[in-house]
Length: 185
Image (tube, rainbow, N blue to C red):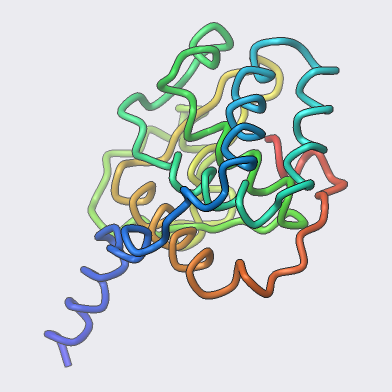
């Protein structure tokens, strides 16, 4: 029983190889839309809103490229200036995915012991739903700072999105997420 639980947990944490079998190259137009979206994240609200809507023109392909853009972020926080860097691309990929999938979100669990300072806003934001439902990131709205989950949680979430894409994207009914709190923050 213990071996099975450990193996299941290991499978949750390790990124899956499922995305290696998915060939996003078939979605050339969607790749351009996703590239435009990433550029629009630096160009202001109007450009961002227009590019988000454009992702829905080729949603399955856009989802493929956005899932491919997911990777662990090494920092624990990103300032507004750092959100314009390539390091922030996974955050923008998740925002795009949430937007085109009717606010679909994936969470991970904190498995390894962590030293948590209750005065640290990062943990206050990330642990709002407990240690079993940790988001990849949360935005500290008053400071526009993005706080990021530990790597083990990020890897679980990336694997969950890969699995979602492999199993559900072809039949999923893509629609915009109307709640900015659900896709952006």
